[in-house]
Length: 195
Image 1 (cartoon, rainbow, N blue to C red):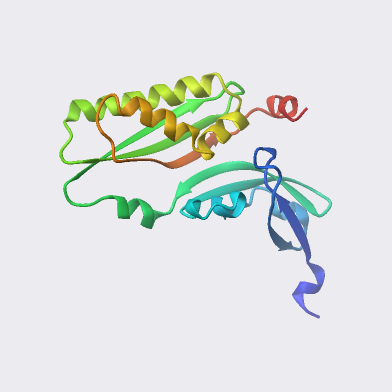
Image 2: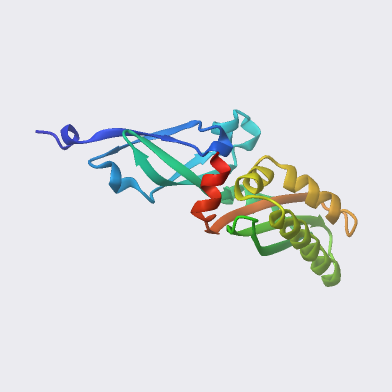
């Protein structure tokens, strides 16, 4: 008898922020064994936009009901090859790493990369980092977790940051390299948001 005979397929849905789009199915012997497993999907698979193929989203399975698993957003990451390809000779790369807490208690670490042609003075690089931090921290403090994730993933954060950073120095490229959920929102806040 095959080991596949005792296993079943579990369908996985993206969170409500991503319209509960179906994600790849998982074969498992017991549905409870896949809780806390992470699923990686390209953002282009969710949006249908081929220009976002270098952005990967990771979802964590939170619970299983029957043969359907529910997930929450866990991480956004740019492909390493894409980030490596941005850096060339004669270019200044400035990275900002910050943590922001949303209104419902979620803690998120965000990595932002800016690319400038030529040499950029250290004071301007510091000012860029502070501008990035101000934009994210103020937006996170006034947003719920799902709204903040949508703000980042759908590109509005990049536009807001770019408009602030361009006041300091001319920036060729600005990318949100990585977003990591350090602490998910509290269960009470999530249940109120779902209603």
